[in-house]
Length: 116
Length: 113
Image: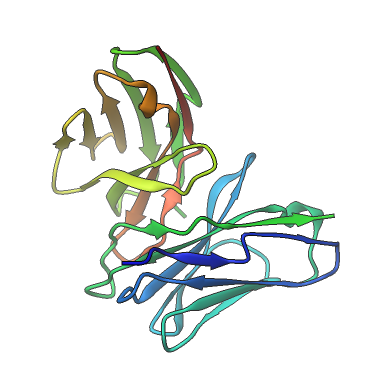
């Protein structure tokens, strides 16, 4: 079974630009979450999508957005990039049996964004 | 919202010794507590988890204990090996939080041969 796939793996942008990151979850997983990982702030939750609906949102500004498609693939977008947005963005999928279960997250290898 | 504190931030042990990492959480409604291991340059992977209806769980050399009253949980690694060297993250989640995990700051474990 293929794991969680994220593209692109590395990208460099300049301040003010926007970026779109993509995530393909494990087949059959309907929940997709996004996390930002930085050396200073650790792993911080961005948002979670389930059945094409945003179910949870972390404490990030509105410049960070996401969506999920009917095949469970997800994208996240960051607009008007700032230097502080440089980070590893991790996508994780989960096999859900209900709407309130929390279970194992399977992480992708991440997309490393550098903002110059 | 939930807040998870993790200690220590770094831990150096001799091969064969035990390692203990402790976490505290703030939200008494949290009921799921996983531990993830992240090796250098790799993705985080679940190594063990515990739910609030259980006080202790063990899997070979790894064990996790949970004290709901004190709102803290700990990871115990016995007979450490060089391949245990990694960053370990604890996390917490509530019943209504879906797959939203609040992570601790991480513990960098170095096992010296």
